[in-house]
Image 1 (cartoon, one colour):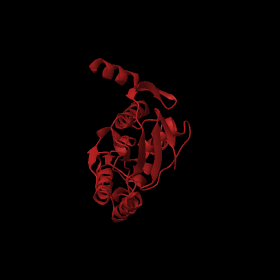
Image 2: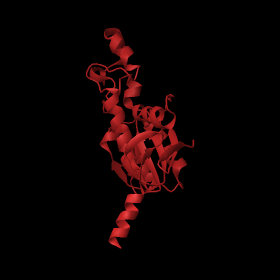
Image 3: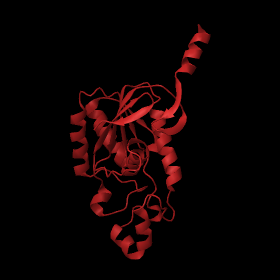
Image 4: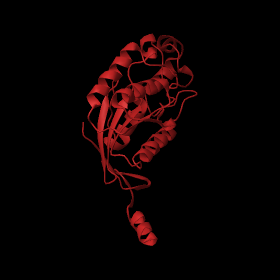
Length: 215
């Protein structure tokens, strides 16, 4: 019986993730609500985000509450969140209303896209470092002190791959604009771009080792 169970487990392994190569994963079906955090204090102050660890603004907290209400009754079992405050604040508001646990995944954090400009005034940086500001607008470029796209893409695809291995049917992932854009252009709609708004959600079905955007 033990050998039979082992062989069945091996047979359930696949090596295809969407149309892209991926580490071997177990076959699993999952509904994913991929959500960007709400408005932040840095947004109001005109500061660059990235690794700047700001919190939700009052408006951002209201946005999270409204999103939570829309998700009531969807059968959500767990919330995976970036460790950054703005994502955790959002996740905590969702969890309180949806009555489910939160699990922090450090690799869901935002890309260090702004490097030395993180947390600094956008206006000041545009005046002092226009070339670096221009680089920050192109995901293929790397600002001084920032995180290269290759490594960033690798960790985002890997952490979502880890999440879909978990034995849940319906989950929420709270992350940031950078990771959501990355997953969209690399997996959901290859080569295409998206600009997620505050507390915007992408509804995704994961079946037979493929991701499908449903809303």
